[in-house]
Image 1 (cartoon, rainbow, N blue to C red):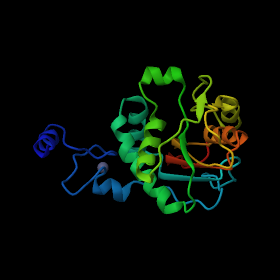
Image 2 (image 1 turned 90 degrees about the vertical axis):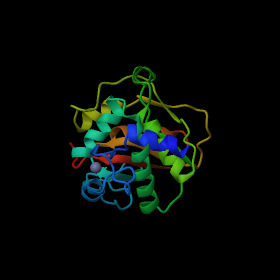
Image 3 (image 1 turned 30 degrees about the vertical axis):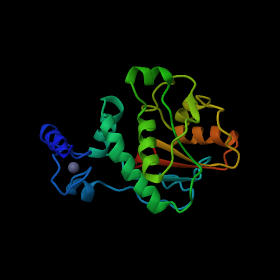
Image 4 (image 1 turned 60 degrees about the vertical axis):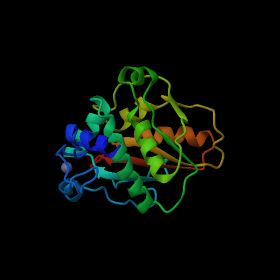
Length: 225
Ligand SMILES: [Zn+2]
């Protein structure tokens, strides 16, 4: 078995999940430079919005590993649009570590912001689900599918503030398969930009009875657009 791994390493040497450089023997998931230089997203107090300008409305708190820029942005785009599913595991491990360090409260359920069935079929996977599985594996939870995307709305990119909120209103529904009353939920997503999508998901989960919803994302935008 060890020989097999040795051959695999020779054929497909493990690469940094951010800059894609071949890793040194003592490096895991990320190279030393990316670990040191990738801009970490700060720990936010209470329900502060990641923009730093307002409070979150339905979400109770927010945690992200990095700022959404440079290698982090490229990596997330690879994960979402170019079949880079192998990146979900290392990104999820980083997010789990950050959640473990920043959030003292525990959760009852882990779920994710889903893509539509149509998009999932076309893409072959749901990147936020893969991230939730990786986070869950680290924190000791099996993610539960609590939300479904009811229709394909136009992409959020290119829209601003109010338009983003209007664009996601009523787009997500509760699957109805789990009793959410009094449950503390960890909602996983890849990127948090203005938060319109995650807030709408939190609204749906709270309407279904959840007592709190915390959002964990791999990256967050620097400023509210
Ligand atoms: Zn790197």
